[in-house]
Amino acid sequence: MINEKLIVAGFGGQGVMLMGQLLSYCATTRNINTLWFPSYGPETRGGTANCSVTISDAYVNSPVISTPDSIIIMNKPSLAKFQPKLKAGGNCFINSSLVVDIDFRDDVTLYKVPANELALELGNLKVANMVMLGAYLKVTGLFSNDEVLAVLKQKFTGAKAKLIDINKKALELGQQAVAS
Image (cartoon, rainbow, N blue to C red; front, side):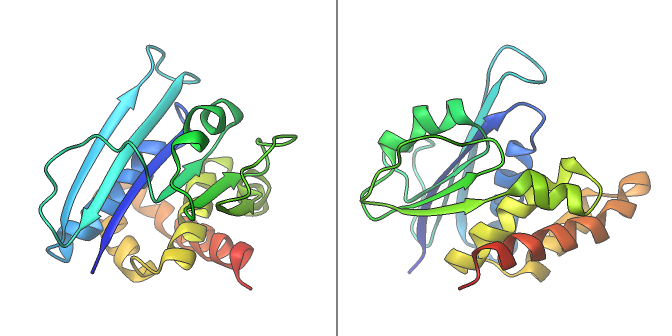
């Protein structure tokens, strides 16, 4: 039975919304119930941004997630806001490139992923979100890389089609970062 409640949070421009959309689109492709709910700060770039994603075999009747199963945190302010809401035993994925010197809860599983550094290894900081998504997918097993890439191929057309390969590599690096 699938019933995953996720909050993805960071600064605007970090690809937070894309991560949530990709997961929802993957669920839709598999005919799994899903709801993606974006929330933006007033700024276009550099402001806060987060989205809630629910993926469930059961009907999803509310976009509000008060106690997420997992959180993907791209920056320090987002950790302060969403870590207290994470359920005990939940998964906390942090971009350890930007989130440092923080006290973490000891009742959750913490995954530190140096997303910015790994993205820079690929030559493009903008794929840090895909590094984080790869880590999340490796731990949860929710969707395969092939499913995510199929959705990306639908979304990234025209000039953006050339970005598919680097996004694939970023997913793989994220998965390697949390491999035991």
